[in-house]
Length: 319
Image (cartoon, rainbow, N blue to C red; front, side, top):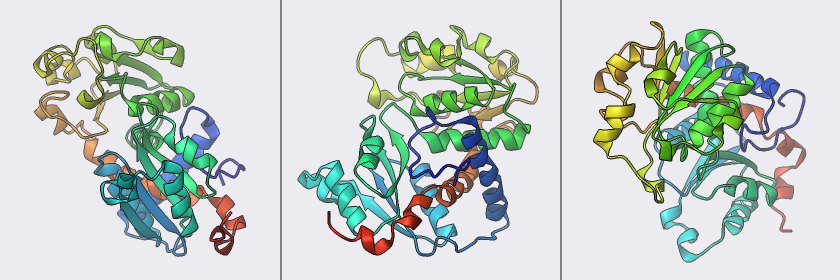
C-alpha cells in the first residue's frame, strides 16, 4: 500500500506522486537498517520473484534477487538467450506463461521502450520495470535518491548535476522525474548530440559547459556513454569526451566542498570519471549498490498487495 493506494506495478516515476516516492524512500531506510544489521524478515516466504532480463545486467539483477531472498521469497532467473524467446515466443506469451506458473513479481529489463507497461496490461502479476529502452529505470532513481537522503539528509533544495549521455539514459530520465518532484534543482550537461531536444520542459537547466553545471553542486552524477545505443550524428571519441566532460579532480573542485560523487554503473573509470575521483572519500558509488538491495526490498514489500486479493489457485486457471 503506497499513500493509501494499492499499487500493482512499478513502471516509472513519471506518473508517481511525491507522496508515493516519499513512502518508498521511508520504507527503503527501514530495509537499509535491516540489511546492515542482517535482521531479515521472512514475510515474502510464499511469494516468487522472476528476473526476466533481455539485456545484460549485474547490479540491478543481482540486487533484485538478493532483495527477494532476504525477505524469504523464491527466486527464478530467466536467461532469455536460452529460453523460448530464442524460438520466437512473444513477450506477452512469456509473461502469461510465467503467470500461469503462479509467480507474484516479474522484474523485467527490455530494450523496447514501454515493454513493462505492455506486459502489465496483460497480466495480474506485479511488473517491476528494471529498465526499458531509453525510457525509465525507476528503481535506480529511487536508490539514488535514497543515497542522497542518507548522505545529505534531504533532497529538496539540493543542487544536482547530471553529466553524460542524457539522451540515451533511462537513469537520467527517472532521476529527473523524481528529483524535480522532490524539490531538487537539476542541471544537466553533456555533448550536444547527447542532450535531448526540449529537455528544459522537464524542469532542468541545460549547461553547455560542464564547469557551469558543477558550480556549487551538492551531488555530481556521472553517466556512462551508451555506445550501443548511438544511432547517428557526431559521437565524440572517449578521449574527447574525457577532455570536455570527464569528472576530474579539478572539475569536482567547482562543486561544494561536501559534494558527493555518484555513478549508476557500469562505470568506465578514466573516461566518464577520473580514477582518483571514483575512489575518493566523496564517492558514494559503492553505497549506491548497497542501497539498491535495500530499496528493492522496500519495493517488493510495498507493491503487489492487490495480488493478495487474487489467490494463487485462481491465477493458475487458464483464461
